[in-house]
Image 1 (cartoon, helix red, strand yellow):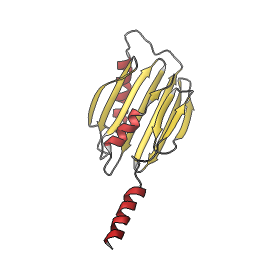
Image 2 (image 1 turned 60 degrees about the horizontal axis):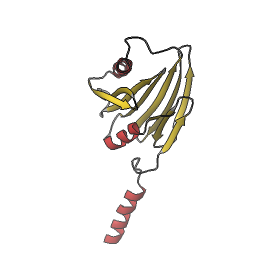
Image 3 (image 1 turned 30 degrees about the vertical axis):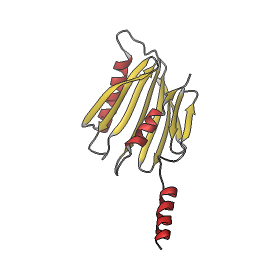
Image 4 (image 1 turned 90 degrees about the vertical axis):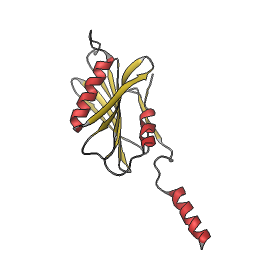
Amino acid sequence: MKNYLILIIGLTFFFGSNVHAQKWIRYQSKSARLQADFPVNPEEKIEDTDKAKTYTATVTHDGYEFTASAMLYKTNLNVKGLSQETLAKTSLDAFEKNLGATKVMSKNYYYRQDVGLDAEIDTPDYDNTILYRVIVVGKTRYEISVMKKSGKAKYGLMKKFLNSFKILK
């Protein structure tokens, strides 16, 4: 009987729903020069306006919301006195405001020779910290975020998603 109990527990751990251990799916948008790994196949949405074309990949899985997007502006973002850090901070401020953030910790994020921001955001509507990254390269603003509204979030899994972000050449 003891052996059967051990077998059942072992099989539960082996076959259980573990987002962290499963093989992730690589999403690439060549048009947006964006790459990120998702736990399951993401839904892609493309929106074209007079100001920009936005590519967004999203997944809701095991209570997590994974999002990666690239906004390709049709106008030049290289304005004298307007740095990459300022553009990233403006995007972070808008993201915070939209969520009703109560606490934000941010630091510079470096990708190749470019600089953006990494942020950990607390809000009253989410039990867990939201991870957010933004970087502006040329005419493109890249954003990647992961959040889990309730239940215990796995910080390592959230960082795995954020760290899978790449800008394609």
